[in-house]
Length: 138
Image 1 (cartoon, rainbow, N blue to C red):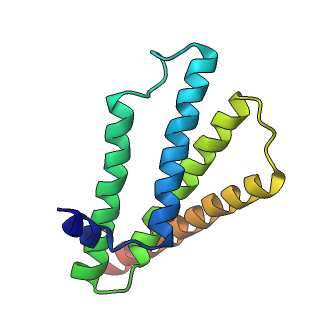
Image 2 (image 1 turned 60 degrees about the vertical axis):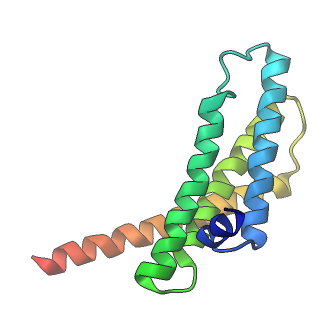
C-alpha cells in the first residue's frame, strides 16, 4: 500500500517533504490558535480538516497521473499543484503565527508571497492558453 501511494504521488522528493511539513505545521499552529483563542469548536480542526489534507494528497496523485500517464511529461502539473498547496499552507501558517503574536520575518513573508505569485502567473498562463484554444476552434 505504501509503495502504491508513493508511486501515485510521484515519489518522495523535496517538494513532497516540504508540503508534508507545511501541512503538519499548519495543523499544529491551528490547534495552538484554537486553544489560545478558546475557539476549539469553531475552528475547523476535526475530521473535516483532516479530510481536506487527504484531499490535497488525492489532488497530487491526480496531477501525477495526468503528468505521467496522460500527457507523458516530467512533472509540471504535479509541481504546480504542490506549489499551490505550499503557498496556501504557508499563508495559513503565517496567519496562525500572527494570531499567536509571533513576529513574522519579512523574508519568510516574501518567499511565501512569491510562491503564491508564481502560482497565479501559472494559472493566468494556463487560462490564456485555454482561451486561445477556444478561439481557434471556432
